[in-house]
Amino acid sequence: MAKLPIIVAPDPRLKKIAKPVERVDARIRQLMDDMLETMYDAPGIGLAAPQVGVLERVIVVDCAGKDEEPQPYRMANPEIVWVSDDDASYEEGCLSLPEHYAEVVRPAAVKIRYLDRENEIRELDADGLLATCVQHEIDHLNGKLFIDHLSPIRRQMITSKMKKLKRERARG
Ligand code: K1U
Ligand code: ZN
Image (cartoon, rainbow, N blue to C red):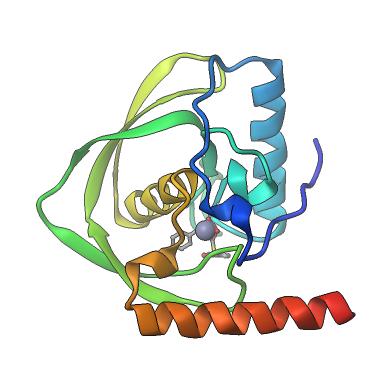
């Protein structure tokens, strides 16, 4: 297992559409495992491959509470095949937008179809934080960040602060 560097916005790699995985082979399994290690270390509850510079449709998620058993999901080519009529609003964060949070409205429940670590097709019915997190990660595969759900003014404010943070980090 290896910890991977997480890309911080703004970065052109976070705006690209990721390519489907042909099959979940040893390379993709290793990527999934490395992404989980990176996510737990961050710490976070989800991570998408473009955030570690890999433009392939792979995400990992674990929304178990800190006193619960871990519940890791490794997903390749995740697709939303059903969304609920009702919406839910959650305060979202993003490991590529450190220290920024905002309420985002999304469908409250979704059904996801994906390939698991063994290349088997699976379906997941998700609601609550898990539904929000999986939708946030699938957005990453489509080059979208949570700030793209906000007003242009709010998005521009966060983007400007991120540019400043990156300049400061580069100066050391
Ligand atoms: O995709 C990412 O950048 C990860 C992101 C996922 C996410 C969080 C909240 C709502 C939707 C999606 C994060 O994990 S940010 C960190 C975070 O939320 C967290 C960190 C430690 C404990 C609990 C939550
Ligand atoms: Zn994110």
